[in-house]
Image (cartoon, rainbow, N blue to C red; front, side):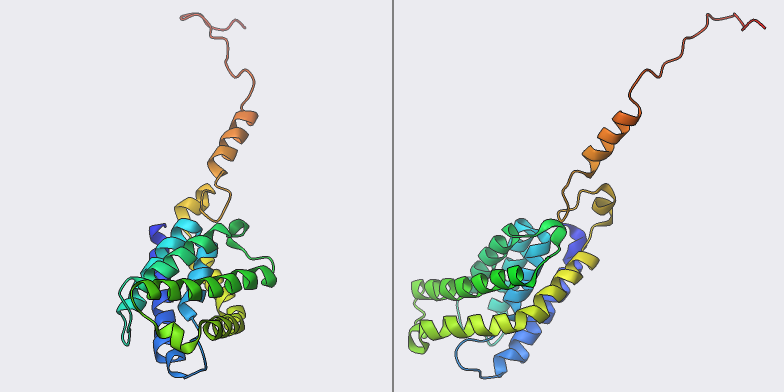
Length: 213
């Protein structure tokens, strides 16, 4: 992930974490809790690609593991969001611009179900049986419902901010940003070669001889 994207990514992750802990975590909704951090990771991954999405997911998940009132093993949520960010980055649209709302909602739906199941599986491996008491089916359905309701408001805004403020000016000028085709340098080279093709040399006159009138 490019260094120019670090500040905007940090701001979005911190904002999502604050909303997650101080607002949505206190609503006492039935079933799962709306996962704002997952939506932020998915939105940035669909702009940054799989590598950037993996790094963003790991950072967001690790902060969530450390933030109070966390009651699970450190690294559990970081692993989940890291995998979700990588998977969402593989589905990045051309130039990081989502052309249809339905495709973005489909990515969010798959991420919501997969992250809930993966989080429960990792919890079962480390001895956390909270999902069994609540009911895994209820957690999956409510997580899917809450994330789909919030996705049209969160994901497009995150993608827009990521494209506008997370662009590397040097890479953008070269046409080699991760959101683009990455062929800007090659295209300029081919254009230059096509324009300058053909003989460009001039016949040199012998030294000391001047052109006759």
